[in-house]
Length: 298
Ligand code: UTP
Image (tube, rainbow, N blue to C red; front, side):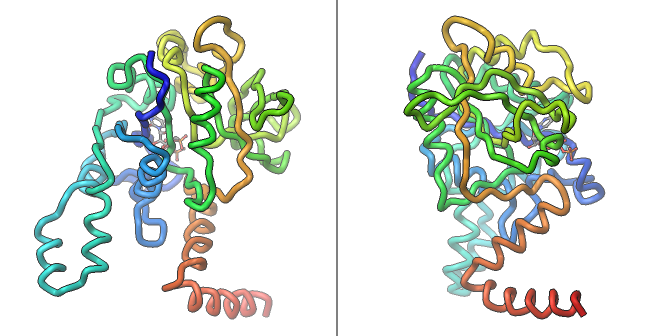
């Protein structure tokens, strides 16, 4: 088994029911966050962490995803003729990010099932999984740290954030113990969306993973869990308590900027936050936001 992590799996086959009807005919990963689809931020993050091979797990509405990362000669020629180099670069950028492979999930039976579809492509190497609903600010480092921890421990690594205790039931939750002198923690238990009074901590699992390929063997025997779906969290729970090669789950607690785009309210907050930080939009948007909040007070 080679230890260098250079393959990323991006599951994008979920039904996106929280965004219906917007997601009736397009994947939620294509929803624009300011002026780029959410999925582009995620692919850019994978590439800048050194991933050279990206596998996207797609579903019925996959076409727009593939089209977005493809060339569009007609638009490019039009922009070139107009001399609009800025837009031309923006249009070309997604197609220049690297090799992206696509595989259909078939039945969207859950995140664990989507990851298992990557087994043949990934082979016997550790690999990264990035979910399209979680955006990590490019100014903050997460995936590279997780890859280092995977290489050091030989297990699987998850990303955790601290949330208000009453928010934990929206997430997978981890019971952890610190490891002396290390920037990561040992994960002893994982529970998918626990009731607030049953949660072992306020540490929530977010959508970045660096996994040992042993997870595929575990997923093959993992039955449906919460919501009738094959849960990646359940497979990781098995690995956390297993012995031998590829066992053990470790957590990196992320304290940087993360934007959740998986539900409507968080999505709107993400768009406003990112737009208000942009040089081209920020000043006008911030001025408008101030007068808007003032009018709400009134
Ligand atoms: P979510 O739990 O957010 O599910 O999946 P969802 O179905 O997309 O959204 P809602 O809850 O119905 O609104 C987390 C990630 O896993 C992918 C999704 O595309 C998303 O990026 N996923 C989920 C799959 O690829 N396949 C699945 O069967 C389930």
